[in-house]
Amino acid sequence: MFTDLLTLVTKSMDLFILIFSRMMGMFFIAPMFSRNNIPATVKVGLSMIMSYIILPFIISETELQVETAEFIFLIVKEVFTGFCIGLCANVIFNIFSAAGANADIQIGLSMAQMMDTSTGEQRTVTGQLFNAFAFLIFFAVDAHHLLIKAIVNSFKLLPINTINLYTDNFISFVIKLYGYVTVASIQLVIPIIIVLFLGNVLLAFMSKVMPQMNVFIVGMPFKIIVGFMIFSFTLSSVKGIILEVLKKMMEYLYLFINIS
Image (tube, rainbow, N blue to C red; front, side, top):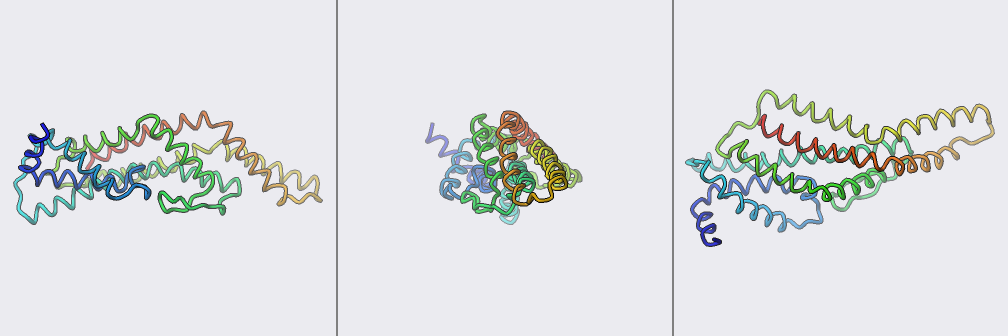
């Protein structure tokens, strides 16, 4: 069986290269797979293995007879297609970092940032907590399998030999996507925002009642303690929202593939 598949790859090397190009584009930008602590050789190896598995299923559905210049264009198009699919998933996954940043603005920790060595980005404290929690849920519900399934299904919904990448709906899709990211990032931390807003009102009232109290000294630890208390109390509901975000990620991936 292995010999038969190897022979198939040899005979359909041009199709294999195009499949590999799309997989590479996705693995180098998609959440989890694009992390810096995953060596490039592993990403290339995963792309080759997935391409090797996918090839027998689409070879009968794809007729590829192109010139060299068009083949090079198709390679670039496939890399870009995989990149866009992975980027779409990555944008939605960044909801958790944005939610943490929104919370830290209210808590007063927006300047207390740390380096995320897996991505090379600066993240806030709460953003890092949200990301870690989301990563655990991502693997716990096998969302990485769904992400790979989406890229595999894209070969049926967006065949290799098609060269139209955008439609008139693409701009509206981008606006809808970023609108959802903004709303979801606020929805995740809305309890913290509301409680800390009321806390700020309380501190303002106390500063009027007791002018001798230094609100700036009292307010900072007060907001940090209250903020993380609310975060811990709402952790169970946050889990449900994260699951909904992951579900939406799959919906937006298929929506992008269908309009491309």
